[in-house]
Amino acid sequence: MIDHLAIDVSDLEKSGRFYDQALKPLGYRRVTEEPRELGGRRYLGWADASETDLYVNEAVSTQPRLHLAFRAATREAVDAFYARAIAAGGEDNGAPGPRPHYHEHYYGAFVLDPDGHNVEAVCHDPPPAP
Image (cartoon, rainbow, N blue to C red; front, side, top):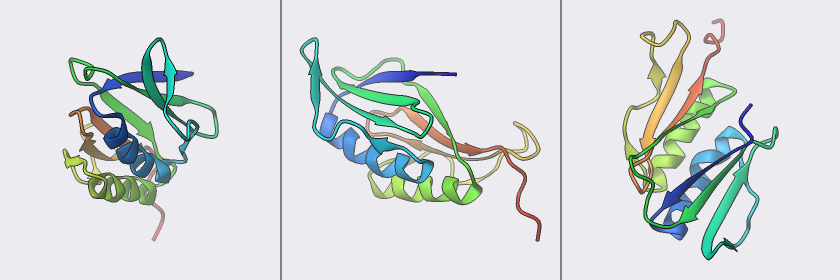
């Protein structure tokens, strides 16, 4: 299991607002209320219930751009992630929907964050029975 991930972003406040909104439907909460500093760089962090953390560090944006995929408990959470991420300034990179080319029940959405990183929410469960 992954303990934490860290990426560099060009605008800490802008990225902070984006990740606050985008990650909320996926069960993440900000664990650094105000930017902290480590080694001369400011950072923010988020964690989920299993304490898998994401940190964004203020610097020149990570290159090449990354693909970060977050597991969603439901398809509704994927939809909410997408709506909130777009409202927070993210750029559409694939609206919520089935992706059967990955596997039968794959349901995901993709949004580019303020630095162009491809952020995904994915649910692997089958759709609810009618």
